[in-house]
Amino acid sequence: MKVWCTVFFVMLMSFPGATAQETRLGVKAGPNYSSIVGDLTEGLKFRFSGHAGIFLEVDYSDNFKLRPELLYSSQGFQFSTDLAAIQGGSATGNDEDFRTNVQLNFITVPIIAQFALNDRVSVEFGPQFGFLLNQVTKVKNLDQANDQGNRRTSLSGDFQLDYGAAVGLGIALTDQLSLSPRFYIGLRNRLNGLPGNAQNYNAALQLSLNYHFRR
Image 1 (tube, rainbow, N blue to C red):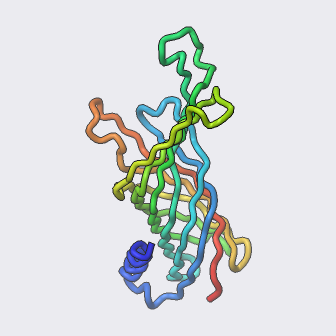
Image 2 (image 1 turned 180 degrees about the horizontal axis):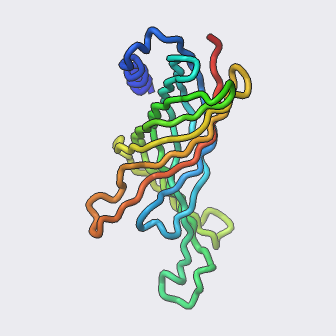
């Protein structure tokens, strides 16, 4: 985490004139609602998870701010499986025998531009970069009351790069508290190398509660 904090602040200082502007440090956290969209995603469902981290607002004017962030963000998807249907039985697909939850844990670096609409509301958008820490897959046997038949596996993400675009709103509640609903769509194809030019991408809805430290 010390390494990522160093990267975050070096990146911030690389913006022209950033050190000469008024800045404000803050922390943020909230829920994610994420999945994979695109080809070969039929049956995948969105899953709830969360995110948390720090940000730094750089004020360039009353109407424009730049906001680099450093976050831990848990994303992923889930799906249910009818074992009888897979094995060619007579099931109609309504009996869900297993639920698989795929958790993709990222370090994300959104670089967000904020344009004020009025004293309370601003429009936010910008690029976001993600580095995959690991993938945790949990399979739950829905026919068992206890944990029998459940499985859990974890694979290193090797800091695999994801990148995309984020857009949302900033809503000031007080001088120190604000809300940020935001939508992220990945732009890097997760299925490179498969025949048929299949393409799918990470997608997430986020709702953040932000706390701005006093100047």
